[in-house]
Each structure stands twice: as structure tokens, then as C-alpha cells.
Length: 503
Image (cartoon, rainbow, N blue to C red; front, side, top):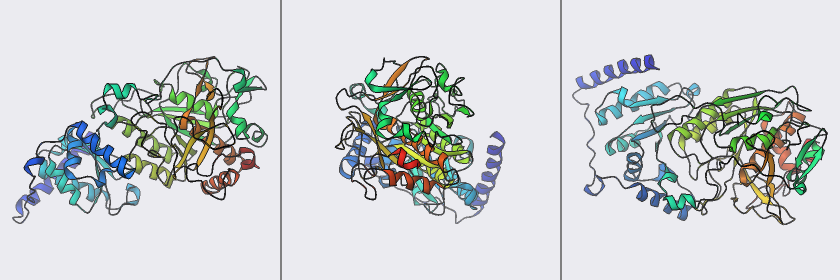
């Protein structure tokens, strides 16, 4: 990386030297109104974001004023993500022959207005995507960049929307982090024992998953999960991943999350789950079927690749958003991966994650994302990002019963594609899973467990039809669902019938 930066430095010294000899090369004069020379406070920035979310149902930094954008940057360690390209769809470096020139031109603009060297500006340049992370302190620089024809977006890279909420608001945000190491004894009404001695969660029968196992168990299909990692204390998602009827498959785990407040830190904290959420998602998607008397996963013979990309489910801040971006590009580049599942998100778009999702989608991956689980701070939001993207299949949870009703905390809306029954009508119990620790169980709910369940069903379908494309797999899933060929305004195609989908 240092050698690359040194090479860039030489390039820019030459560029600046050339410009200094040109008498016509002058800095554009940008005038800042006296009322906008001091940035808004973080609470004021949040209020503007909330106003847009309440009035429009969505928020994007592209639509904001220069002043609001700069204020957010100033409240986020002066870090900025720049997505560039010759068009809105020019995001992949390998398909963008002019990416180096565009990047150099933009960095030259930043040096011109910031009046500092490249070493103090460029934090990182993504090797696969047309984006860079830079340090910017002046509002004039933001304005000059947004005028450039190569700009796809300019966003604050480390503005923490949720961290700005008051301690009282955060405390009342039920399950906002999605973390927990609890274990719960399962009610006997919430599972059925099957050979050799595994527990099938009640919710699986709502989707005809157990009879679908006569046709497919996910063998040969690799699911990539982007989440908080895998517990080192749950051997069924470790050394005993191949056990019982679950044999001949592979498990890989990676860590791309950097646990640091400093943006220049690049050392990750490893692949181990320090939250509990990722372990639960892996359990419902592909936990082994053996004689341990614990819950089995939907695709219990599928391969698993887990990426620890964030500390919790709320993708707030530089390192979490960067981790998710890196996980998606890595999974996109892995030819063995067919399916990507992510039960995390943000209430509005993040440019670098959007680019990474599109990158993975362009590699043929079938991507499932959680539609959202409410907190006190986000009850007014519909389907969250990136489930709201066209490239993602959005999933939410519904209650048990003949009438469709979303779970107590689940989001719904026109961008939902599928639903999963994950909340019991009488008790309110959710889906049984293997807990963080060996020989322990728990319940997990919300759109998170619905998404991991759907990814597992997709693995069953793809394993049954290994030569199919992503489109064919998705079409088959839609055809088996409740509302097909129509799409419900709140619940998409509804509940998938796994048995019909694999026949």
C-alpha cells in the first residue's frame, strides 16, 4: 500500500507542477454564506435526515445540500467516501478503463482546495470498486467535487446516525443491536424430533421444509453469510459442522471488521462472533443434523462461508460499512458462492455498500437481505437498506395463522419479496436455533431469521437444480409462494412452499 501511495504522490506532484506553469489554471472561487460557515450539530443533522425519512420515506446524501453534507462530514471525523465513474453504473474498476484518470483528477481537486499532500488525503482506494475514502475538512472542497462530472456520490464515511441518538432513545430501542448470548430452554411445542436426534423448528413446517428434504438438503451449494461472525464456543458451527447426516461439506470463516475508532487502523478483530447474531443466522440456515438434540438448519448439507463484517446489525460508521463492502466484494469474487444472506442494514442508503451489492449481483449471486426489524428510532421506516435495492431479495417475518400479519417488530412494504412465518400466534415464540454456547438453545425472530431461512430454502432449490441460473432459482421460489403470480403490496409473493419449490 505504501508503494502505491508513493507512486500516487509522484503523479500528483507532476500534476500540480504542470498546473502551476499554466497561468490559466485558477482555483474556482466558491463563496460560502456567512450563516453556513459553522457546521450543524450532529443532532441537527439527524433532524434533517429524520425530516426526509418522514416526508419522503427515504433519504439519500445525493439529495442533500452541500451545507448539510459538509456538516455530517464535520461530525464524522472529516472522512468522505467518493464514488466516481463516467456514469451512475460505472462502479466496477475492471469494467472502467478510465478509472485511474478519474481518481487522479478527483484527488487533484481535493489537494487544490484542501492545500495538503496526498498522504494526508487518501485513506484508501478500493481495488474492485470505483470509490475512495478521503479526508476533507473544507466545505469548498465538497462543493467543487459535487460539480465534477465524474462524481457518482459524495458521502460522509463515518457519520454515525444511531450513535447521535440520546442514551434514553438507544436504551428504549428494543433489540437495536441484535446482540445477545442468552440461552433458553425450548418449549416442546416449538420443535419436532427427527432422526438421528435433531430438533426441527416449528416454523420449518409452515414452509414444508422437512418434506422438501426428501428431494434436497443443500449439498454442493455454498451460502455466504455477512454478519457478526461465528461463535468459537458453538462446535456445531465449527469442528462438528460435518456431523451426523451433515457430511462432506465445508465451513470457512473470515474477519473483515476493524474494531477501532481510528479510520487508518486496518487490523481486523478476527472471524469470531462477539455479538451472537451471526451464530444464530448460520444456525437457522445450515446447522448440522445430528444426534445432539439441537435445532437443525434449513440446508443442513450446504457449505457455509461466514464473514464477520460488523459488531452488530446496525451498520453505523466507517468500519462496519467498510467491512460489509469488503465482505460482499470477496463473496462476489468467490466462484463457489451461489447465495449471499445478510440480516443487517441501515435505514438509508450507503454508497459503498450499494456498490458492493451491485458488484456481487453482477457476479451472479442471489442476494437475500432483511427487510428490517423495528426499534423506537426507526418505526417510521419501511424496508431498510440494502433490502430496498433492486439487486436484493427483501424478506420479512410474519405471524403464524391464516391471515397475513407481520411480526410485532418486522417491517413490510412494496419492496418485500418473500415472508417467513417466524412468530407463534399464542405464545409469541420465535424460531429455535443453536445458541452461542455448546449444547444450548435459544429463540431468534424478526426479519433476520426470516432472511436466513429463505437463503436456506434457496440452497435447497439450487442443489436440486445445480445447472440453474440465479433467475431460474428465484422464479421457482416465487412460483411456489402464496400470492404468485401477483405480488402483495406489503408482503411480496408471501410464504415460500419449499416442497413445491424443489419438485
